Structure formats: structure tokens, C-alpha cells
Length: 269
Image (cartoon, rainbow, N blue to C red; front, side, top):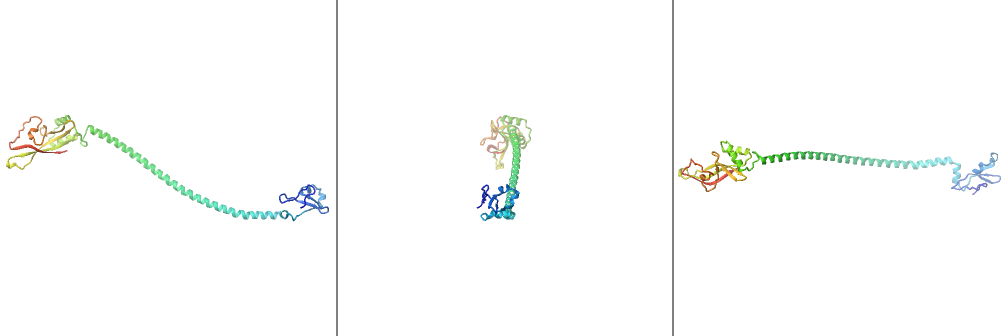
């Protein structure tokens, strides 16, 4: 392989060098040394082509053609690759768009359910507040009823309350007295006290009873009153009715043919 006789540089594949030679003297110069030769002496220098490095020789001779071929090769390789990458990118984008759409739909459903849940919670809070108000009103009403009483909530009165009521009441019948008592919130009952009845044959078989009003008091238990004279009674089965008055009372309608022994007491509260 020839080399520059001036600087000793040799052309290799890693370091190509353009060489020129004097045909008359076989003197070889590289391009740098060639450029230092006076112009009048360059006519004898001939450009050398070497068989040892045909690739570089060909490249020197047909550099433009080689560049064109390289560009075409790059284009042939690059364009399909680019189209494949572009196609893959498009498929990937479509996939992610579908995933995004699905996720957005799920998010919208979750948001809608959260909103519905918030509405239910708010409605429950409102209902709870209303129930609390109703409860407080009912508790207040119950406390009032337990303290005062009325016809919708009956309580056990004290004996003194009953005695005061009987003294002031001007009812004309048992039904009216019971109604007035319930309006005061007093628990009371309609009572029928049955006695044996008449002993004579023509009246035998006819039952006889007396009507009383009973109050279930807290301090003295059940107390009985006759409605026509407000007398306090203490009826006991087996005892004569006339003997059940709390105080001596003149029984003007006493009949010797009447057995007033008490046989049964019935209550209607």
C-alpha cells in the first residue's frame, strides 16, 4: 500500500487519504502535501486509485451516486418503520381514548351515585330533625298529660281531687258525670252492683242492680259514689247494699220484700 513520501501518511479504511503521484519519479503526495506544491508543478501529479480500498476509491469516484443510494436506502428503511410506529401509536391512542371514555363513564356513574347518596343523607337528616321535633312535642304533650290529664290520657287521681270534683260537678246522669270526669283526665268506671232482688213470688226471677261511679285513686284505691246523692259507697259481695254507705243514710225506699244482698259487681272502665 502506497503512502505519502513527504509526511508518511497512509490511506486506510479508518483514515482515508487522497494521494497524488508523479508518474516520472513515482513520488507520492497526500492531499495536504499536494496543496503545498506550486501550481506550475501540479500538472505532473496524477490522482491515484487503489485496488486495495475499492470502497473508498468508488466513493471518491461516485460520491454523489453513493449519497443518493444511501438516502434511498435510509428512506426505504425509515418510511415503513415510521409508518409502523405511526400505526402502533394510532392504535395505542385509540385504546387509551377508549379506556379514558370507559373510566370517565365509571367516574360519572360514581359521581351520580355520590350525589344520590348525599341527597338521601340530606333527606334522612331532615326527616330525623322532623322526628326529633315530633318527639320533643310528644314528650312535652305526654308530660302535660301526666301532670294535668284530659280525655285522651286518663290518670289515677288523688282522693282529694275526686272528692272536690264530685262536690262541684252538677251532672244530671251517670254518662254525663263520667264524661266530665274524663275531661278532667280522671280514670273512672261505670259500675253495676247486683243484689238478690225481690223475694215475693210475683217479682222472683227479676234481677236488680244499683249504678255507681268508681274512681281508681292513688292513695285510697277504688272509691264508689252514687250519682243521685253523691254518697260514698263501699260495696262488698255478700254484704247488704244498704249497709255499704260510708255514713248513715236514710233509705227511704226500703222494701221488706227486697233482699239487697250484693251478689256481683261489674265495671266498665
